[in-house]
Image 1 (cartoon, rainbow, N blue to C red):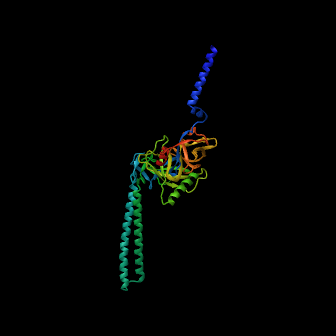
Image 2 (cartoon, one colour):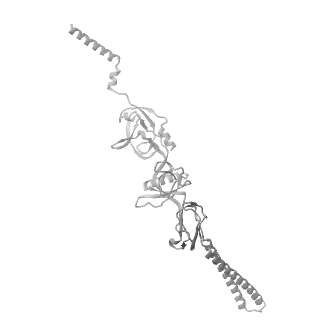
Length: 389
């Protein structure tokens, strides 16, 4: 009885198994072969890409001058607050003018004397010329009168120059600011006797902080690349200007952009770099001489450039690569050589060409040489970001 029940149970299970496999034959097929993985792909399209180059930079003053005395004497007064901003032409110091006022008065008196002698010489010349015309004076007397007048004119010119010199010396007792900017500590206190040689005449310094210079260095390879791109634009009739965007050590951006106004004509043999400089407005004095910042050079672009989203990039022991899809729908490995990063994308120097289908999503499921089922990404976000940059 027990044996009969066991045989009956086995028969029932076998019948059930046959029913299941007969009703669902696809289960057996799925166990032997998986369908192609779903991926997202975009078509590689060349476009114009704006490039930038970032460097460590240092701020320097636009101009920095020493304020020196041009005449010696006792320093009577300082007319500014140390560290304050002054304008060009402001009177900063006053040197005792008494000596120079007396010298000016003396030179003016000498000029008057010379002018009186000139007037007398002119009368003598006129008289002798008339007498000579009437045969009442010799030719020598006439010539001597002419020479005396010419000497008197020279004496007047010399006396007038002395007056100008004396006036200049008197004016120099008022020491004015040659440029606008921020003053330093005074070097000589009021009441001191100052001179005009060496450091005896140094009174203060003025630093112009608006605008300021941003100094940085191109590497020789990047300098050649930038020059090549600029020359290509010029050949097309365009006139690109290299701009500079400033950021601070904490990552915040400075709200004024600069313009590159100087690049060295020679490469520094010790560093292999090319010195460059930009001018940046500094109305709020946020940039100070000696300060370190980051400078991003903009204004150059590359035509017919190929970029790929960062999510499409893979890494292997042999280097970086991407997956592309051939005409048969199979995935292939494409080793690539990359340039600089542009937004969330990378510039491809070699390894891809226009029209290639690049896999951007679902890469982890892809196997080289295996078929994939691709869905086109009509509006890739990274392509938009590259176009905006």
